[in-house]
Image (cartoon, rainbow, N blue to C red; front, side, top):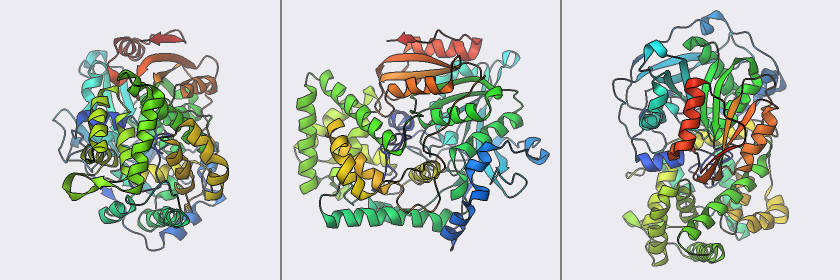
Length: 545
């Protein structure tokens, strides 16, 4: 989802200008409470003149758009490489993760991929993989790749922690997670240190005065410069189209004729882009919590405002409180915090932005609603600790004040993907009133985020909207949830339409939560498992409640 809150793709980037980018990771990490693990790798060294090199690399001769329009022939050194699977070390920190290695059934490896697919025989980078082999080897179908969203989420860290949800699929598939390029152990983007991030999180993300607006926009632009300085080598090469090409290289290296894939949230966009680039190589693909491929830069944020407002209203209705009354209550609380933050745990304070972050984090899953109730009640009494803890979980801040870098990757990938750029003037004159009407709670935050998210970004965006048309591809299962907060249901309908006739198969979940399969709903679970394990394609339009 986009982050604006972890949406079009996924969640706040750990800096004031951030989005709810679409990611199933927020719901998963909140429930798994830090059980994530991964293999080790490295991050990029700072590049003194990275901004210049990043901008230069993004010239027409080397753009991802040019690479996507051609089918690069990869050298045999890449397509024929043999992976060296070994026991996994503790992970690079990812959303909600702890530094703990997975069990013995998991093995890790690094796959080489072209840094620039326009020059496939040139410089390479490493893509971190993790695998647990199928338990019924005689009935093995092949590999099943996962992406849990973001962009910026580590599959190497998330898959072992959430593997219990996919134990039935593991009977006949090797479960394979990976860190997409620019993420965690795959040349992960690093832009700021913990102190810089902590300072940035104190900035007002819904500025009310010229001074607040100036501070907000200056920091937003500085974030891009920080990314270029520290990670400029990879910034032009971490677009979703390149990640999709990496998945096809994985398919070949893993020995599969077709790609079998399970994508959540932003992972649905990645899966759709793969299907567009390689329709003949589509095996069994499921897209859950679907990003709207027809929405542009501003449209994704507006969709998220709508989705999170719906989820908030459903939360209040579940407590016997009208949507109007509940919304007014939250708006009042946020207004108070904007004027004066309240004390919270560890001598810190709860600001308006941190409170908002805590609220939307708890709306990813219905199972998180009790935490929201306690946190709201406490905040109204002047104790911000509950909402601050929820915000810290979303911002990937541990008890020692250390932050993960998934938010850095999220922002870098999304800004490299989209051409959308919005000015503060456009926000004030055209967007703010509309977004506030859609959601009095989340609208102002998401409208201002448009002006800051990709401000002065050092790499040009690739497209207005993602291309997912996949004529001739095998049927792709598309799951939309009526109560999905970060990726509203309408996005799944648009995905089915854009995949093309006979390709997209609509499956509807009549429940709450960002992602349907991970809720444990028996109808959804059975339908998806039958599709993956027995190639049973349901009738498009099937509904599960």
